[in-house]
Image 1 (cartoon, rainbow, N blue to C red):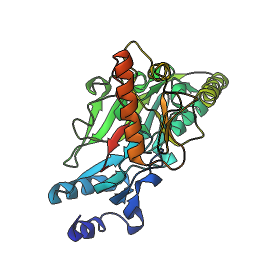
Image 2 (image 1 turned 60 degrees about the vertical axis):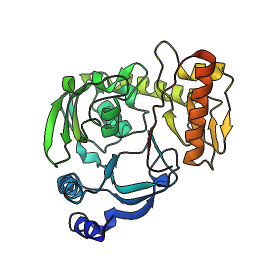
Image 3 (image 1 turned 90 degrees about the vertical axis):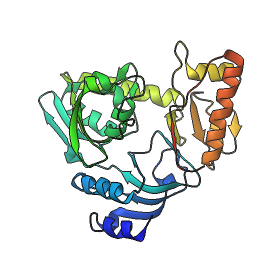
Length: 302
C-alpha cells in the first residue's frame, strides 16, 4: 500500500477509524487471522469516495461485516479491509417494512422487529452476522432464509455508484447471491415482515435460542456451520458417521457437541482450521462419496 494512498485515505476518513497492520483475529468469530495492511470503519457517506480512490490507485480491497463466516489466513490480508459497522438508528421501521443498514447486526434487527410486534425474522435472532453479510450469503436457520423477507437491496459498485436491486434479481439460492460476483458492496436492505403478537414472537425466539445453546458449541470461537448442507444429507451426520467427532488438527477441532462445527480450542491457527476442513472433506468423500463444500469463506494469505 502506497503512502500516497494512505495520505488520500486520511482526507476522506478520520484517523481514529483507520487501523494499520490490524490483527484480523480481532475481527472474526474464529478469533484467528494475521494482520490486514489497513482496516477502516467508514461511515456510509464516505464509502463512495473510498471505492473511487481504490479504483484510481489500483488498490485491492475486501468488505467484511462481523467476520462470522470468515477464515483469514495467518499471513493476513494485503490491501484495504472495509469493515461495515452501523448504528442502531440505521434501523427504520415503517409499518411492516424495515430499512436496515448493512453493518447492523442481524440479531439486533430481529430484536427490534420483535419489539415492534413484527414476525417473520425469528429465525435470524441467533445468527451472529451483520445484515449485509446475511444478504450476501442468503443466511438462514430453522427453516427461514433472508430471501423470505427481503424486498430489495441498495448496493454500491466498484465505481462508487449506488443502485437498488429487487430481491428477484439477486439470484438468491442456498448460501449464495450474485452480489460478490458483481463486486457489489451492500449499503442497506429493505425487509418486509408481518404483524404478530409480541409475546408469541419472543417465545419463539427464546425457544430457538435455547435449541442453539443445547446443540451448538457456542462457548468456543467458530464460524457457525462450517460446511454447506449437501443435497440429501446433513454435513454434521456425515462427519460423525465417518468417525471424525472430536478430530483435531493443532488447536482446531470438530466439535463433539455438533460435528458440523469446527471450533478454535483456544490456540488454533488459520492453517490448522483450513487443514482440518480439508482432511474432513477428504475423509467424508472417501467413505461416502459425498463432497462437503465449506460454507466458510477463506480470504487472505495462508
